[in-house]
Image (cartoon, rainbow, N blue to C red; front, side):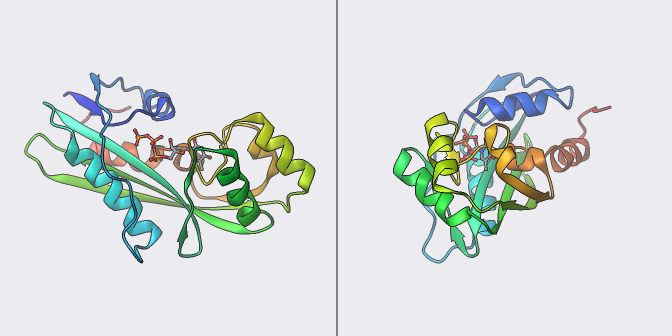
Length: 187
Ligand SMILES: Cc1cn([C@H]2C[C@H](O)[C@@H](COP(=O)(O)OP(=O)(O)OP(=O)(O)O)O2)c(=O)[nH]c1=O
């Protein structure tokens, strides 16, 4: 069985490798990632994963994922510049937020199976110095919510309830279940 990963994210490639799977192809999906007006974070994450999977035309199964950081009903942006990362950290400081990580698998017949991972993350209250030093690390670049749990940010996280791999970008429990249900051989 052929697995195509519809993702440009190197993290997703590393995570799928931990299940002992190597995609036979990488085909990043180029879709419009603008949230709809009033769209809830979990609906948005699921829609994005589904649209990414559907956007890739390839033989075999196409796996896509989308990771969204949500403060209440608010979807935090992917931090592409320092000002955005700072705004995110100000919002996340000293409180709990959710990370919704959706995956979608398109079978060769076009049917799509989906799963969602929902994780609660709590940051300590961040001092001005902590925010400044985290921003200087550059690790926030391109990350939803302006942080990467797989780096220095984990030292600022008091508690996580859910899936660590989900926060990084591909929830391994849900991914394994989805791929097994589709017929992939996974140990
Ligand atoms: C919260 C958090 C996000 N992220 C990353 C995961 C995702 O790559 C990114 C969220 O953006 P996504 O749109 O989910 O993914 P992407 O644009 O990187 O890749 P593609 O659409 O091609 O699959 O933020 C981390 O790496 N660590 C974290 O702790």
